[in-house]
Image 1 (tube, rainbow, N blue to C red):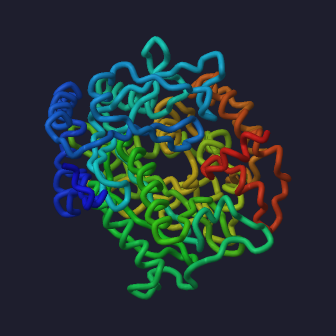
Image 2: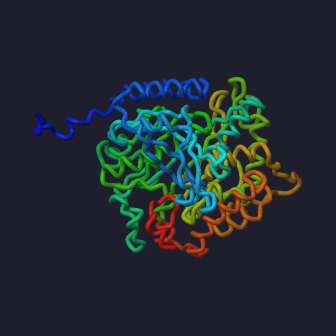
Image 3: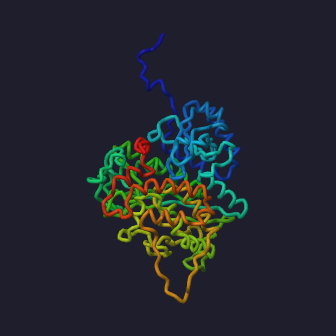
Length: 482
């Protein structure tokens, strides 16, 4: 006899792990991520998925060339049976492939396995990153997660270097769900807090959002170090610990996803537009970067200038020399060039300094463990895989900045509009060499589509088109109209 009194909730028994246990299992997975061979990890996680009956789906995520984040949920049983033959239509994803090369594959990165907080992602799910593969199963040239993975693996295998990174990602919390899609240039975004740096009541909406997002990220093994309101009202920053460059880029994508979902659950929007509100500080993504070899930080030298080694200064010189042409990678949207305003601590000067926050590169105070460079001119809406790939390629393959000691150097500035950024990027032979001509042309084509809807001089008012047509704002119905 059928029991008609059963609640639908009683019929479901999907996996939900308490936050303290979640953090423990994710940290254990993180410890072996870049140590235990992928094959061993795949075997372990396959066995786990077969055994754990309470998991209903596995989320695979990937990013297109602009850094837009995509997710697909696969039935667990189907994934286990078909993981080596997961195809999708790349031509349906803006920023991936043309119609003629629509059949792409997803290559599961089993080393990225993560358990998820069920109140953010829903119960019964785990997540992994995937690399995009071409029809012949080679790494797809325009998937910079895959390209970054190849590059970091080659650096470790051939030269013994490990690239380490972390990012300080700022965002704004604004009122209303889907505030970006519903943006009105006459009224702008509605801030939910008038406080500023370190200044928020313990249970106001901004602080409750920060607490909730930080708790979820710690449970996912981010090892958050500090979480706080930022300089501007309604602005936040949650800092997670240093890790391998590929994993740092993965965490940047998940960081933004978690913040957006937590804000949505609270009836608000977390936006990572570089300058969503005129007249106050914008959002940055300061990228901290160093190299290690044989367990030692090769960017540190106790007797070196600012305690940095010649290798670190060599990296800095090359990044400064190529700054104008790589600016479009670091500042990839129309709105990003509003942030490069010197009146709001904007890092628009092509120089390095241990103290001047207007410098493109800052040298934080550090020791043998923490010595690094901080690239401050990166916007939070950039593709983190492409950013770190470009930093590495420039540092190893770029040309040093030639200095004339007899002359006083003129301060150079980064482009102040996307048109100049595109022009410098497009005409650069160096960009063609490090990204390939095909990727350069593809990337430029998407940037020109949006730029051509915008005036060179943006003025003081945030325009609707720089929000509506932004690559991170999910306006698929709007893009389909053009």
